[in-house]
Image 1 (cartoon, rainbow, N blue to C red):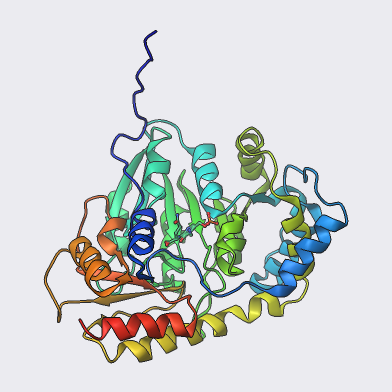
Image 2 (tube, rainbow, N blue to C red):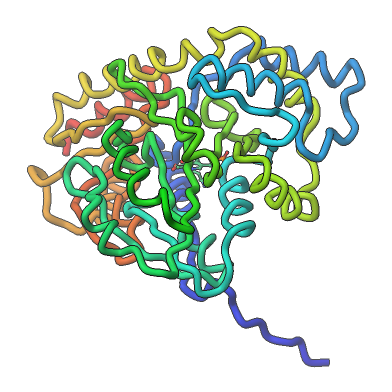
Amino acid sequence: MTIPSITSKLPQVGTTIFTVMSSLASELGAVNLGQGFPDYPMSEELIGLVDKAMRKGHNQYAHMHGLQSLREVLAGKIEYLYGTSIDPATQITITPGGTYAIYTALTTILQPGDEVIVFEPAYDSYIPNIEINGAIPVRIPLRYPDYGIDWNIVRRSITPRTRMIMLNSPHNPTGSVLREDDIAELRALVQDSRIFIQSDEVYEHLIFDGVPHQSILRYPDLLARSFVSFSFGKVYHCTGWKLGYSVSSPGLMAEFRKVHQFNCFSCHTPSQVALAEYLTDRSSYLGLAPFLQGKRDYFQDLMRATRFTPLPSFGSYFQLYKYDRISNEPDKDFAIRITKEYGVAVIPVSAFYTSGKDDKVVRFCFAKKEETLQRAVERLRKI
Ligand code: PMP
Ligand code: GLN
């Protein structure tokens, strides 16, 4: 019998850097400040609510669009935070994580040959998600070192085939955030076009120094052409839950749900029941920014004793550092070397560029216990 061979749909894709660095960290027993996940416990209250939901029998399929009561609470939260009224029945779908929400949005919109503007460094799922749909990523570098968007380059990159712009604020890996003038530029660019927007806002609540989050949800005219995606796992310190949601206009969401219904159909019920109750208390999300800002500040203070140089981080749970006072190695070599020699795993930012562009910058995740950050910095001081 001959086994047929496969033609890869993603021939360029290897193993994601997050898995590579986490595996190396665990193999070597290094402190893992690489992959973005907290090492402190999630809310006991939320765990209790999941337990309660399971014991009360909420263990069968949820509604395909997500639990109605959770969608209602989310619509209330959106109105409260961003002043926009959302219909939970037609505009919100609960998904198994933010990554899935992005994939589904792209699959809903894209036809082979469409062009998608994607800013690099970019979260590493974006470009494979574009390519698997037969579409063409048009990569635009963010401006070094503030990692803002150069809208002149965006304007020059638009063609009749441009179908989508992908945004991410607060931004992974850089911690940069969109400002009001970015939204004005975006609006001017798309208003008379056939361009849709995919806005990845998984770090929505993790934004610091009083800077307001420029969610696309604030702008109904932009929301009419957007999918805006979120992750419960990211903000509630339970990345392993893989639960999120997407918000859009009713027309776009109806198409999104066609893709979703035969891919995943519905998501984990007890967590949705639990979150519906947990989110009725606004402190469940209003307390997140000061909590993470405290971690960023704590980490930055410790890092002053090292030879790393920080770049600003306004949000997410990441902090970039230059290492030019230490070495001029390529960032991947540097990241692997410090993991092996000093026992601290970080992520090289070139992994977020398909070209491998190397700003000689590495990413640290500061969503960790104080003792973990201390242990890491004790080692980093020796470099
Ligand atoms: N987008 C960005 C920018 C992220 O950092 C993450 C975190 N992995 C996600 C999306 C996806 O989150 P989830 O784990 O819910 O799929
Ligand atoms: N978003 C996380 C990060 O940037 C990792 C997610 C993943 O491992 N796919 O570290």
